[in-house]
Image 1 (cartoon, one colour):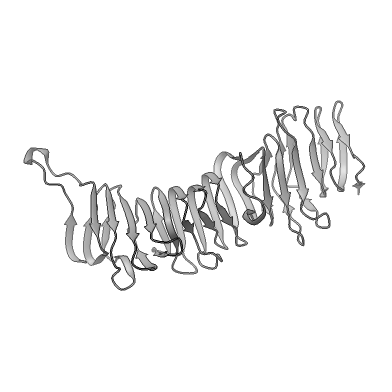
Image 2 (spheres, rainbow, N blue to C red; image 1 turned 45 degrees about the vertical axis):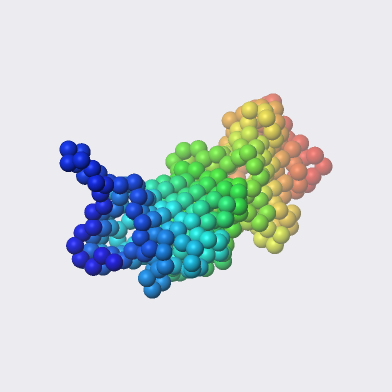
Length: 362
């Protein structure tokens, strides 16, 4: 451990070359006491031995990351703590012996927040908060690889997360906290996503595309969704939302796909904008999972069109009665289930086809 003074790691070089950071440094465990200072390598600091007590990393002093990586790698125990306190990491990597082995993290402040100023890569093992009210800030990208797990299975620990971009690779799992996960730039998912009745807030300020696979459905469904900036573009894929939708911005059915809302026993209130835009590649569908619990479109959830390219929009079991709808020229609606309306105006060259379904006007 570093109890006082400073550790600076350098390569031995000719005097004229000066002192430079080495590419790597390794410790069994690392304790930085109150008066200790560790100026890290700009390469990788690896922790790969038995923990001290239960901690592999315990910082009560000063840690300077120098844009380097902290890598936790061990095989001999199934649970360790990484306690960074007020000194953030730059990059973090984790490779444990088994997927169910754990690293429990502790940060600093109120709320207690573990800070990674760039990227976080979970290669194997679980990475999760050590306290129920703890949060995490990952300014760069979170990548969860095959055998990696982010968060608690039940979501009962961890109040929230703010993450630049999320990539859940095949074989990786993202267990969301019951609070809110703010996603700033991108979200891709080929592994497992468990919502734990929490909220995903898309806050990227531009268009965030979800597409190419139907992986946010069924057991991988979203729960509550907010769109606080930018738009979520559904690009010819299927997405299930089991809770409610809100936010100052909203969803655009960019090139077809299905947005299914609610559950077998609960309805979804959709209180965000909903847009239809199509180059004619595929039709778009908005539907309730159970016709007994229709999707409730609120007046704040304004409808908008670019062009439908001749492709139909199929609403099924949707309650539009809180808004007045004007279908512009080129719009094409075909009811796939019962829908309720307050007022509906169909412009010239627009198509409204009840298709044998019940269209109720209040």
